[in-house]
Image (tube, rainbow, N blue to C red; front, side, top):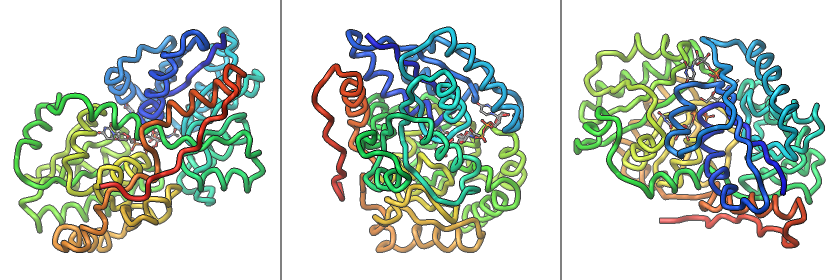
Length: 387
Ligand code: UD1
Ligand code: UDP
């Protein structure tokens, strides 16, 4: 029997670890789980936990208003140190590229506990982009013992950095597992405002933005582009669940409040957001997760960034990097809204990131690592195009 500590703290890492927690719970003969929420996010984390019915064993409650990276890192380290010292797990599991991911993996290393890194190997190779996530992800690679990658490219990139092939498992991304779990459930939105929007016959464009590189002027440009699009296309509903970070809200609200067809709403529960996404015409976003989810639903994404650590869907044509230039965003959004051929090309559903079985593969990798199974898992290979 092995004790596994699963550590998460923000909306995206929790969405992506939830299916794995549910899968690990199916193997009580091999694993005991200790689930540790750092609560780097609060409401946005609690919403995800409620959707998947997960009640963490520990809640470190580290979020504070506009927390700086240094203060956040400090308080995460101190609190994780205490829990890992007390629980002494046989392994720590982290996901992605957040402050929680990095500090948990570093703290595990200090305690000489092996680390599994989920969604390993994504790189832009620019240390400031995304900031600070590129560095968090790279550093987590070097404190980790098992690297679960979403794609063959990520596996190759890890090998180029000297990570041994035997330690890399291409599992696909658990975000597709999460998406499939919530989309299998009910179709009615919990949020009444969203439900009303969904009942209208109008096309929906979903917008999200939160990246630190876009704080200030770039984010303002995105909002101004949206303002322009909303007046040019009054029959389109633009739905913008605004991140709870006050730095984001301070930019978004002054430019976009009070426009009839721009719906500035609070972040949605993952189940509601997934349904919104599946009903939307296209997405404008700087989110990492959305670049993975939307293509699998055949929903084009205009990414308001100039570089991405997720190039696979760009290569398939489902995602376009448009940057944060106001005019460029408008040009591409108008092309999607008016150009049928352009829309058709971008909206072919592709699934380079997963097939809904990533969590099963990760469990199989862990059983193999601990010697509970002699069979190494079969690597994930994407089906190129799905319709
Ligand atoms: C963080 C992650 C980023 C991830 C993003 C996903 C770090 C350094 N950054 O972004 O990698 O892509 O989450 O959303 O790990 N807040 C609330 N309630 C919440 C959540 C946030 O009020 O439920 C506010 C707080 O004032 C908080 C601020 O948002 O201080 C920023 O939180 P933080 O975790 O630093 O978020 P980001 O760095 O923006
Ligand atoms: N998401 C959500 N509610 C929302 C907006 C997004 O549940 O109102 C989900 C989305 O489906 C994706 C994840 O949150 O799985 C992305 O989180 P975010 O953009 O905050 O982080 P990133 O992926 O950029 O790290």
